[in-house]
Length: 338
Ligand code: NDP
Image 1 (tube, rainbow, N blue to C red):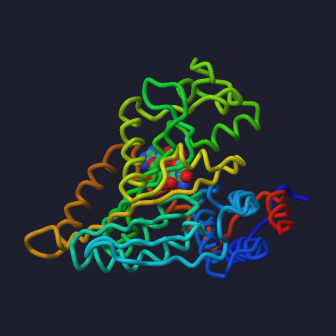
Image 2 (cartoon, rainbow, N blue to C red):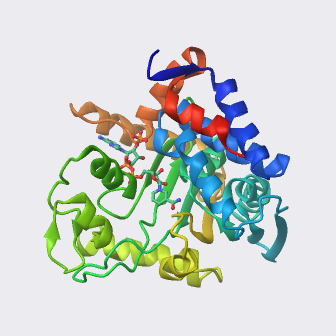
Image 3 (spheres, helix red, strand yellow):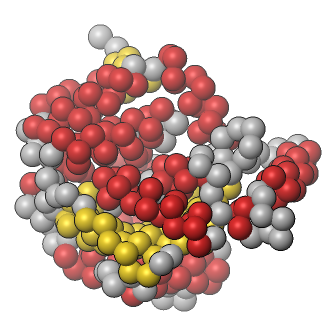
């Protein structure tokens, strides 16, 4: 028997959705999570694919999220919409908030979406990519659980706080980046602990504040922001945008609420969308998008470069027809959930 199971993307979706339904999620909640999990498998971002389903199971078991929540949309200002996730999971709130955000970006030129009261353990690229596919420039920011020390400090305060950006293209998928503000994702440290592999220097400090390459000690201590004070400033900005600005939690507050250590933070997300057609005197996006293509060409002229998101786009071309390989133990574990 092989260690992996071959699944089509439809089978990935059904496996995720059915498990989430058995765990008590409503059809819309289960469907939206299954959409993001399937997109992650499709783009070979396995750490946000089926791998996450047991995380959803753990956090549902605490009784803290409402797996049947129906998000509620409201308007805070002509260019600011709000989606209250009502303690459900982020993917459904984000799906429901996409159209109100896009409509406001088109009418106002720039608009924001405040996403509150959600449990967020997903990647951010699906929501910014969705907007850029409609011709909008998009940003997303969310906090996490406090695992990261501020530059110069040694105690966990910030989350791994990802931010994502998407730029639309006329003849192809958007250019997207989506990155944590810590040197490494937490999962990278957990995988190294499982495999008995040391960490590269500079990823973490131990509880005593001393630099460590031991994954076990690192997980008890604090991760470090990327680029020293620069990543630390971005992590702080993400806390402010996705916490204080939109009336939601900071990562340390999310950490305090995650007493069971599920690793699934309750918190908020801020999205911003800009219509490029409304940012130039001519009122058309064509010139801006064409100009951007020149920059992309200049980047790619240099050997060794690629555009962010190209890896995902290449993976997608393969997996849409070929399907994906998933560890058998994970498929069995998901099949037994609920
Ligand atoms: P990576 O460091 O793997 O990648 C960051 C970005 O850089 C990606 O957009 C990637 O594009 C791009 N990239 C990577 N290598 C190159 C290269 N050589 N040239 C150009 N671009 C490149 O991501 P992270 O580990 O920082 O984050 C992983 C995911 O984890 C993100 O999706 C993030 O949203 C998520 N996350 C979620 C959290 C949550 O609580 N919800 C918390 C923290 C992280 P490509 O995809 O094409 O490789």
